[in-house]
Amino acid sequence: MPLHAFQTLAYEPAFLSLGAEYWDEVQAASFPEHWLRFRNDDLLPLMGLNPASVTNSDFIAAFGQFQGREPLLAMRYHGYQFGEYNPRLGDGRGFLYGQFRGVDGYLYDLGTKGSGTTPYSRGGDGRLTLKGGVREVLASELLHRLGVPTFRSLSLIETGESLWRGDEPSPTRSSVLVRLGRSHIRFGTFERLHYLKRPDLIRQLLDHVIDYYYPHLGEISDPKERYGQFYRELVAATADLAATWLAAGFCHGVLNTDNMAITGESFDYGPYRFLERYDLGFTAAYFDYYGRYAYGNQPAICVWNLEKLQAPLSFVMPLEAMQAALQSFGDRCRHTYLKQMLRRLGWQTLPVERGSLLVEQTQEFLSRSTISYPQFFVSLRQEFSAQWVVDAGHIFRESPTLSSADQTLLGPWKATYVQLLQEATPEERNAIPATLAAANPLVILTQPRIETIWQAIDTENDWALFNATLAAMKA
Ligand code: AMP
Ligand code: MG
Image (tube, rainbow, N blue to C red; front, side, top):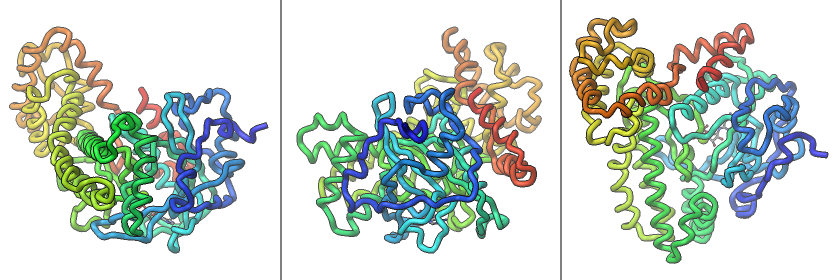
């Protein structure tokens, strides 16, 4: 008899089988309480589970009490943090819970955060604050809704401890988050092997990454060419990732190389923020004094991180090929950004060259207007009308959300928008409302909003707003 529903998954010991150079076996902490605060039923079918037959007790047994799953692995990695190499990293408050084959055929990781200390805790408590867990659930689910390739949150369990933190009123409540994504292998996993001068392991890890996450490259028989193509695809995936952050109006906040996944997925949401005003210099982390990880700097930082990754990879492939591949980042990022922005503006199929002026005018407007970045797209979704095609005067006519100053600032945008509408086919015009609805969730998670959600939890243990916010993301 399995102890709980999550014991029946199709687990595969992929990372474990790389060998003990890559991980340490660890134990989960035992916690005084287990209150399930969030379960993501949308992810259960991917795991081959029927949500109706998975109980809250199953979640708690699996992801609060860690019954019947071993070994649990703290992953070893290093990384560049704010530009400085740090060899004292690794999973310090989480571990790889397990890897399973999804019903879609892909291998997925389940990783914990806040589950106890490990050899890499460096004096930290190995815990995650409840507020941190709440923030991460909200970010991952909204980013997913906004089209960012992101890790998802599977569960959040409050664990009944009191934590002390410099950046939260303390004592503060504790939690364990479980997240689901393709791979927790990071740029920093390779950087560590370079630091240890282990080209043999770099090759082994790269073969592993290609086998599991870039299997189509297996057809390329020449290893140098195969590795080169891997790097090119990683550059493209990371450029797409940076582009989707920008379009989502998201500032990750801590783009250290230990937070960059080898699959180009976005993960690890700490001091992130969603934009209020559109401002390229907007920073999320209060400790990011020089704006290294500012909103508009995210593509440049991804390039920097990809460049650093060339050092370990140069043990197995020529540096020049990687340098050439990295040149393509800018065009790729720009192209994906324009596509994403045009979707948010209602244009699903418009070629980017034809839509780029509208995107520039959107940026220009948003950087000068007082309307918040996400509110503009919500307003567009709610106020768009088929009448707009008649002339620019119909656009946002009597808008409840745009001030008269905004109406003036939006003049050039309106002229372009009406022209695109008039040039569009009826099918293209008819598709706009559905595109706007798909691309622009009504949920806004700027900082004051997150604080409001947290206040209700903090003071009244009232989860209604948190739950309603998550439900509204799906609508
Ligand atoms: P992060 O900023 O969450 O990516 O974490 C950077 C490093 O600090 C990683 O090695 C984490 O595991 C570690 N870390 C962060 N918070 C804690 C904590 N409360 N206890 C132990 N290690 C931590
Ligand atoms: Mg991290």
